[in-house]
Length: 113
Picture 1 (cartoon, rainbow, N blue to C red):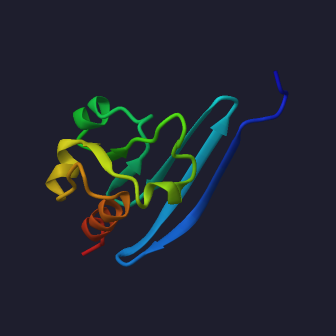
Picture 2 (tube, one colour):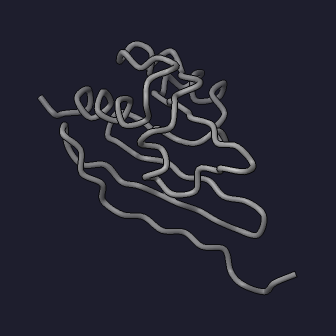
């Protein structure tokens, strides 16, 4: 087993409706990524929907595969959303749309008035 530390990175991502934070975490034999907006998170399939739904949070998830995992936040741009919390659905996010479309809806919803 390697003694290498796990890796985490974050960076600003620019979209039509604003800016979000892209996050990637990797460790031996595992990874996950997400895009954090003011209104909620678009993330990979590691995220559970039940608990955030109980707290009224907007979460939309996409799912990679073992041969094509979602490892960097940019991987979520074209990935299809496969699950949403009720709060995310209330923002107009639906399964089948792309991660980019979901982020844009979250950014539009999260703009300060």
